[in-house]
Length: 265
Image (cartoon, rainbow, N blue to C red):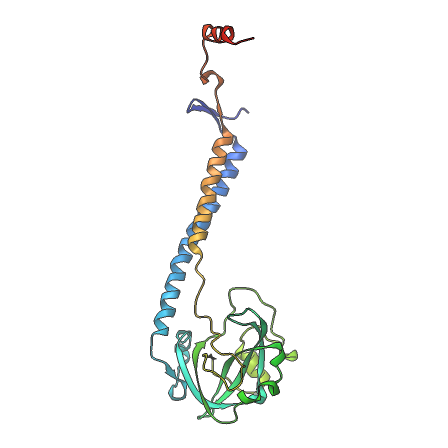
């Protein structure tokens, strides 16, 4: 069966069924991805606005707060402080790179016993591999109650895949308070306090590692998907249209003969 064709713009546009169907499906998919990124953009902007709003609220005093379970999801990125005694012998180490230098090392996660007996996990900050041994940072292993200021974070799956935690080997990649509490044999509060950059007597742990910014590349993704859809339609049109030879401008025979006679031999 001959492919349907029609004349347009001084040429012939041939509608080839296979190419047309494939182009329609691919274009619809690309447009759908672009629309989806528009929704993602609105979601991300709302999330960033909510994060900034929480960071402007008064700091939470965890020692004086009885936080109901229903309120926990709204605690992320809230400024907070707590006073208690570090249980240094129960440190955990979460593999991480430093916020500023991109160097490999660990985050030191230390349970803190609050004045009322509750247990709060504190992310004290980053240390290089060489400082995993607490003896290398003995001056920061406080044996008296102290107050820690920082940002509250909640355990979640994260945006990017990561290996599973291995509690048996003491290898941690992400917060998992249930696993960590089981390892420690204690019950932990359902959030983590990431310490701010208040200096320690020893150089490490290095606080202030909390990442309180969210990447927002959805504008670029929107332009990419819609741009690809537009380019695909243009390519399809170029490949389906052919100029009709009869429409090409013809040079009169007398003019052509005159030009040939004028050419020097």
